Amino acid sequence: MEKMVRPVPFLDLRAQLAPLRSEIDAAIASVIDRTAFILSDHVTAFEQDFAAFCGASHCVGVDSGTQALHLALRALGVGPGDEVITVPNTFIATVEAIIYTGATPVLVDVDPDTWLIDPRAVERALTPRTKAILPVHLFGHPAPMDEIRALAAGVGAVVVEDACQAHGARLRGQRCGKLGRAAGFSFYPGKNLGGFGDGGAIVTDDAELAALARSLRHHGQGAKNIHDHVGYTGRLDSLQAAVLRVKLPHLDRWNGARRRLAAHYRRRLAGSFRMPRVLDGAEAVHHLFPIHVADPDQTVSRLQAAGVSCGRHYPIAVHLQPALACLGRGGGSFPVAEELCAGIISLPIYAEMDEEMVDAVCSALL
Image (cartoon, rainbow, N blue to C red; front, top):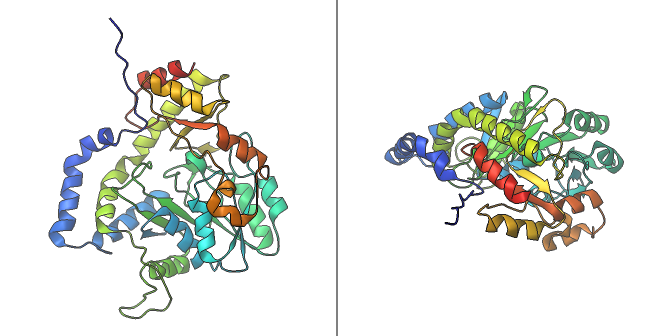
């Protein structure tokens, strides 16, 4: 008799939600019963909870991680004529946020061992127009923030963290969200802390930045009916805030499970596949578990045939996307990032997995 294959999904949100269902239902019912859908007490309470979780003074809930990065940059005065340094191996939203301000994205290559922004490349890219540096905590791995902050300070630039994949990650004991002037988070459903739709947040210790971001997310309004700025419709809605408040107390436990699964992957795959190195002093949260392979399409097909679902993040570096041809950077501009993007596949990793499922993935690979 043929042995049954136990499928391994890439992500199983049902398994995460099942034990929380009654609490989430009650939270959503509370929003509906009060018909308090926009900027309600649920949003304020979540902002307080998430700021405390990050160890920061302020959290501003917005409608997406892209908006969080955009409004953080704009609140810091980034605009036309400025340059913002970031990386090519990221989701396009990182660069979109810069373009929305009118500033110029300046891409730099990444470290071949960590796959994160390379401080040496940043140093070479600094100019008198450098207004900000936007490091990405890619896949939940904290970027080398000590070096980035020092470089920024040397030219009077600000550092904004793209922490959209790094909820709860730490560097030298400090959470992502406390490692720059501000940070942007995403609460897209598949994130380590995800809602039931789009959502995001700016986290900062800067009271003036937070106040301006709160105004910009709500059509530039300060006092009722007084619009001090031309702003946006960029608010976190109450339903998302209610769901996120239920899930937040479980995040550290979920992240701990991801770290244990990642360690098991590393033990099984050591010497067979290229994987990003976690920085010394960093505690990653493994939003994704990427490996680099020579034949990604064939590897994905082989895994699918074995009942294993996987992903591709991000197979085309942002400067090679048709929408960003305006950057004027063709193939070969950032060889490390381009090589990584072309060969990365993302393996299943989520808190509800067990080591037997990791073993099944590794057996299919090996």
